Image (cartoon, rainbow, N blue to C red):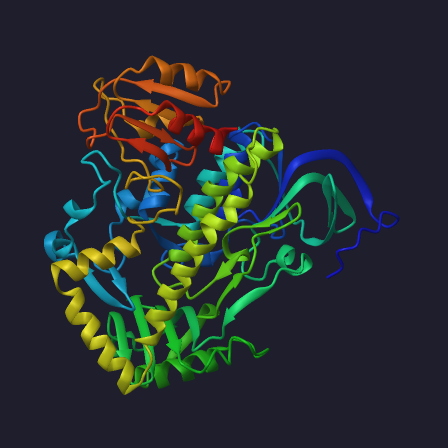
Length: 513
């Protein structure tokens, strides 16, 4: 892909945007919402002409939303627009309720609701949002797209990026016979990101162990396949309902990397071999492949070009953590890039996007690799699987795995002495019943002052409306007297005792200039 701008062959678009986003998936659209909320002009270019795809619909497009994602949507007043989680608590265990209900898994090993002790999670107040909910890709794209349009985001479909050229003050993006100007370009265009490839980003990592298949087919004899997730001597298959099948074939990712078509005969052959049955497919409606290849860009920024979501990191889609990881990227990047555009960013603010999100990406990729390691059809993996199953059947084990899968302990390594620094702010409920998450709809930071300190009110006033002062006691303050909250809901500074005015001023200057 050529990154050199050839102005003589491309028709010029005269508008200059603050940001062009490549990709109108959930990550790109959510990032567009964050930027537009902060008064940035945004253009989203999406190569697909039709936003609807059968693979985005149930059950293929279903995803579990983690605690940081749910909190982000709640803080931007988007959570109430999601409907699927109200109808579908768990796609694999709808019939089971209560303590025995499966609420998550690690490498296909379930953990149960009754074994998870949420009281151990220090920043989860009684008024917190749910730690895990069900949604689907198409629902998220609809909700985010509607919000983005309402905020003035321009979305162009059928516009594939074929190259770009960046200068000191902006980026020229080429799509078909047109070019578009922007100050910044963000690649949210998936695992095969054109922006990442054209930008020369190194994409380092490990090669796959298996080819995964997602299939919708008519079966002559569906009773030959068991329901749920079945681990066999040759891999794994999962049938959520008759004809909706996921297969893992431990072939080193060979088929996914080949040019062979996904035919009915091939899928049937793989399904028979993995399941150990002679099941017959009469009609193949949908089939796609994927792998557990785990790669991550070694930097998320090259000049005025940034990466987010699958463009920055890929791994096996086990447990839906890729979507949550990408939405976390968008929540972290949006306010920082907007502050940079408006010349309100302290030194190093935009670079903190990479330093904060890259370690989170490493954790998720390693989490994925660990799952694959105990899913292999080998005696060693089966032994490890049995030990992990025993561990997850304990309260300690289930609580730990739930916290990891749901992202409850996600935090950034920020400067600060208080143990809550770098964590998501608890959803404090003020005396009038208002909750902190409800006060974050405008995307501003908050200086939360439980003791009505006049110096804190004066400090917040120095930031021109970008740092809201919220005062008054809360029903449960966790012993805190004041908290500085970034626009993404992360605690930047907190204190249990007397406010050190110099300390809070330094913390505010670090994030709000």
